[in-house]
Image 1 (spheres, one colour):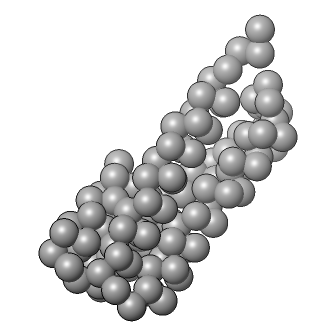
Image 2 (tube, rainbow, N blue to C red; image 1 turned 120 degrees about the vertical axis):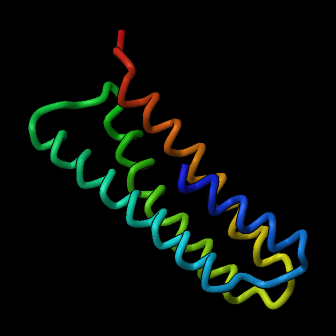
Length: 111
C-alpha cells in the first residue's frame, strides 16, 4: 500500500508539473522502512528454518526490492524536470510488483 501512495504522489507531481519535494521523500522513507521491516521478518523466518521452494530467486527479489526505492529517490532528486515524479512513481510501482512476486514465491508449495 505504501508503494501505491508513493506512486500516486509521483504521478500527481508529474501532472501538476512539479518536482519531487519533502512529501515525496517522507513517503519514500516510510516505504523503505516498511521494506526493511519486511526483510527483517523474512530473515528471522529463514533463520528459523522456513524456506521458499525457490530460495535463490526469493533472496534476489528481497535484496533488490530494498534497493529500488533508494535508486528511485536518488534519480528523481537529480532529475531537473517535472518528470522526477514519474521516475519515483515507476520505482514505486516496481516495488509493488516485486512485493507481490515475493509473496507468490513465499507461498509456493514447490509441488
